[in-house]
Image (cartoon, rainbow, N blue to C red; front, side, top):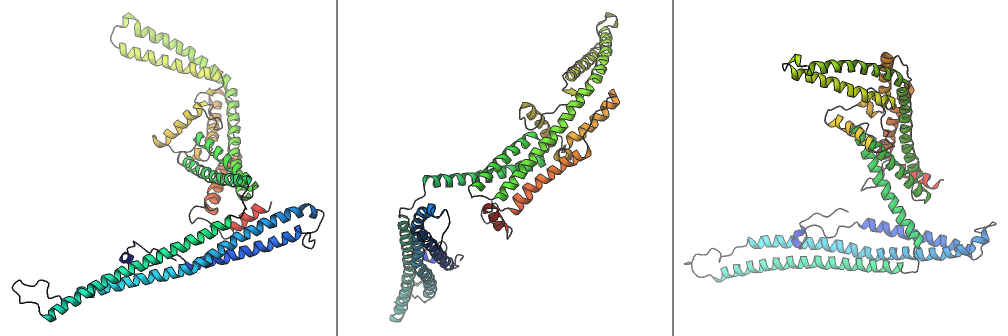
Length: 479
């Protein structure tokens, strides 16, 4: 029941001091009564088994579990006593709650009546107010009016104070009834029935795992959002793989303990498999690029060596032009700049030749770090991709769908053939579709299920589909 309206300030409260729903308490009384009855019934069955009743339990294993049945029956009997105590405490509290709600409403009505009386008293005539100093003496009739107004004002004030006191008594009485109910419930728990250390550890571990699942699930969602904003960043993929692994292990453990759903295990496993599939596809492209670089290396080295010979001749000529006295001082800065440009080109060609010999790159095509090897090289590559988006505004859809390396292999194939006459393999069309499809499937698994079907468990987000809880429960207990 929502807070009741009214000017509760008249009785010294900022709002309704008794926000309670009687029907909910009545439902709780019924619930605990039913639970106590069911537990008592089950305890009676187990006790009869423990006492040797074969009508309820037969078979080769009957004798082996009779003793345990008797022990469990005793524990259930104590447990039913707890539910009985809660039921009785709530049944005793319920009339006090109803009385408190009625009394507090009546106190507010009294206060409103006192306010109205005070307003009427204030409007009564008072000949003594604003009376001129030279006015004749107050007559007996006028004095009667003055006294009547004073009595009315004081009466209204007394009624207001009485209304406030009535509310305070009703609140104190309800608080006392609540404390008495709580004492009754706590006393019922002092029955020698306690969770074992193993039960407490299991409960703590279960709670911890559920917290981890929530945390790492939302970390994964945040990383997925970042991957869309800044596509192709390997560190994001690595962290997403770690988060997916933690969620999978935690969900498997919870499901094994009977505290989680195998549906969550399946979806988290699918998420991790999709990450792994992305890694396998990336590895396949990397392997093809390595083979292409190796195959093209001979032709590239031949061209680079020839270029260095030509550049050596050009450098000699530039040196001659720059420092021969017969050219004089005129144009010397330009001749020196030309020499430096040739030397820079020689250095770049030598570096490219060294890379080709070490089979790490061919011109602009080079080996790239993979996300499953997080290191400085990968981070340096990621910083370039981040700068592409935020500094250069170069957001690439090909990176988003993980097909950028496929496009690069196609460009490399064309260039290696046109420059060196070397034919290298490139990725088939299905490979590109598999990479893009994997990305889309990953979004579906994370967003459609994780944020579309499955409730978060926070606040009111407890259920989104009518059959979700039943399906999850079936998968929890059906294995």
